[in-house]
Image (cartoon, rainbow, N blue to C red; front, side):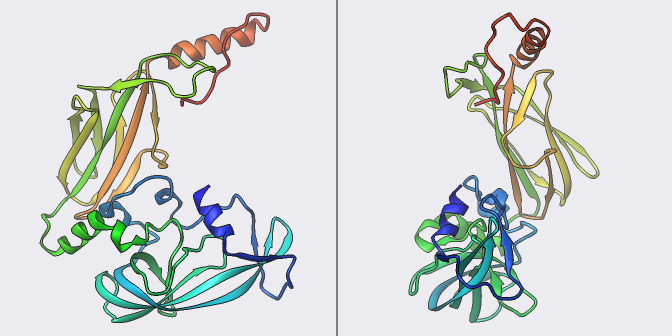
Length: 285
């Protein structure tokens, strides 16, 4: 929702003139880097996404905006695309230059850059040398990037190996359509399975609901919970896999539902006996 609201702020006029090579867009389309748009993603994950190849700290020295014709849900419209000249203060990944051009927008996914402000930029290098930035790329103001900068500035001396971490909680009550938020408790002692390319690992959840394992060699990992109960992974990956890079990380947030089987049996019984009133099944809150 955030990406659409910010993207729509760049919408300049509806029913504008339509030129050739018009981009077709719907209001519910996904922005590049969408899985970074839904939660506070740490730099050790943001910096190594497939859509990210340029990371730097810089100041937006000049901004030029142009109108771009699109078809929004079948209707002609104009939206804005920004061309931002950045003075690079510190380059971390793929940015050796002192000045770069960042493009953003034209697709309802533009980041709202302001002239004169400093940003930590996560973007994708285009073939023409420009860097494309989406609202979902983890780009942020410098004063909000303290933890990101700490990680990026220490990359060259950081210990080798990747980290997988996250949380695991257990629902305390069954689903109730009258309650929006289901209470939960830390799944202390719960085993988390981590299957790697050459070795498998296991780690236990602590009393605060957290788990972590570090110094993992780069490769593809599958993370799962040892449980015969229903399990929901609130990360966007399905299944729970990640391509872990050296010095990178990945976070997984699990909810274990001890009532899932009971709910399923209740639903089947309700399907067989329509006259019997039972609470309707809902997605876990």
